[in-house]
Every structure is written in structure tokens, then in C-alpha cells.
Image (cartoon, rainbow, N blue to C red; front, side):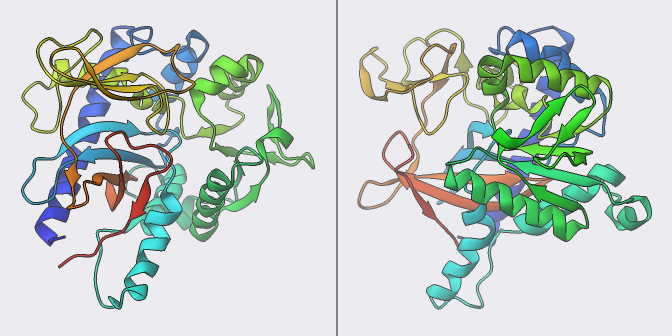
Length: 354
């Protein structure tokens, strides 16, 4: 890639994040949670986390089409709550340079340092990370993922290392061993933590763990712990936001047309407002016929319809989707390649700058 292309990804991602912030404010002010498929038992938590700056968004990943060979950059979606591929983007693709005899090459990749600094902002807020040591008083962060999911555990433990390098006291505990009550969050030995990071989707907590959702709401209300990523990232995570962005920013070069109803006369993609790895996704031709589709476990969620855009492809026909991590600002780029609908069989692809 060229430096110019990397700079374009950086600029686009920062501008898109700003649009998400404006759109989230609009959703909250106009009580549009139902339209986005937000579970009712998380609405209060979303509002409280949005209104208080201490609930800091640690990291997320934008999925983008285009950006290579003068193809315009377009937003596909925002994995704001539980994004993976962090280990590959932050660490592995640096190693790939050495493996390919590109030791002196550069990347658009400051992910590790950016997220480490974002952990410091839990204490200092905003960009005042130089004064972290003056404000820090030894608070602890408990990191959790589900037992049995190796990728998510690796991602969570990498985040734990970033927080440790930032100066926090940290511990990892499988989610099933964490204890919750209205007075706080505890590891298996009963140690209490001021911060809790869970690599577990907010929407799954709401629908599958209703009692936990109620307890977490009490913990937040009583200011006993701060939960990461914050509950308001569920707004960003909902693909219903693609429709809000389409309505609010129709002239943006990055935003595709999107609706809660099928779009007339154009090729489009049907998605569920929540879902992972391309599950329950359809590509629908302009005449209404289905070009391709993926089944999945998210079919009960509300649908959105987004204007279709081609991914960059190579001579073999493999499609490439850019992923840009965001931690206070755009901080790192990588790619996934695969079929027309990228699923969990897609391959990680690193990059270097010419």
C-alpha cells in the first residue's frame, strides 16, 4: 500500500467515528432504541454510560470496502463492542514483515500503543495521558472471556497485557467464574475490581443473561465498577445505526444508502442488526433474486438493507475487506480475504507501506 492510501483510511475512520457519536446522541435524544433492536433491559445502562465520561470506549474495529487503487472507501459496519483479529493486527502482521524479508518496511499499525494509552485515559480522560502517573492510584482491571473460545481468550489476554503495560493491576478470569452482586465484581478468590472488561456481547447478556444485565445495571448505578467496553457501544454495534447514518449523512462519501425496508431497484445486502462472521446475510440482486446468502443463528433479529458495494478482489477472485482499529483515533489496518460474504473461514492479510 502507499502512504496516501493509509492516510485515507485514517481520515475516513476518524470522520466515521465522529458521525457515529452524533448518530448515537440522536438515537438517545429521540428514544430510537427499539428501531435499532436494542434490548429494553440495557437502555438505562446505555444512557448512564453515555452521559458519564468515565465510561471510556477502549477499542473497536471498522470494516470498510475500497481504499485501494483509488476505489472509494465505504463503511460496511462497526464492530464496536467485541471485535476480534486484534492479535493478528497488532502483533502478527509485524512478524509477517520479517518472514517476508521486509524488516525495514512500515505499516499503518500503532494498535498496541494506542490501546495502551486508551487504558490510561480511564484515569486521565481525553488526551491527558502524560499525567497518568499523577492520577493513578493502583486500581485493578479484571479481564474475562468465555472458556473454550481460544481466539477470544487470546484477544482478551492481549488487552490485559496492554493494560498491565499501561500500569494497571490486572487479572484474567473465565466469565463463568466471575462473581457479580450489586456491590461489585469479583474474581474466583473474592477479590474486588474497579474495572471489568468482558469480551462477551452486550446483546447476548441482555437476551441470555437477564439477571446479570440487571445486576450490572445496579453496579453501574451504584458506581461500584466500570464495565468495558461501555454499554453505549451496543448502539455502535447495531447495524441499525447504518440506517441512521444514511439518514443523517446522505452526502458523506463513506456512507452507503441503508433502510429498514428493502431498497428498490438496486443491488443490496440484507443483514441482521446483530450477528457475527457474515451469518444471516444475503446479497440480493436489483431484480430481487438472491445472489448468495449465509445461514446462521441470528435470524430472529431485525433486518437492515444496505446498498451493495464491491470489495476489492485479486486475480483469483478473492475479496478483500479492510479493518481499521479505533482507539481514541484510527490506529491500525489489516485485511480479511474470502468469498463474497466474509465468514469465519476468511483469511487474515497483513500489509506494508511502499
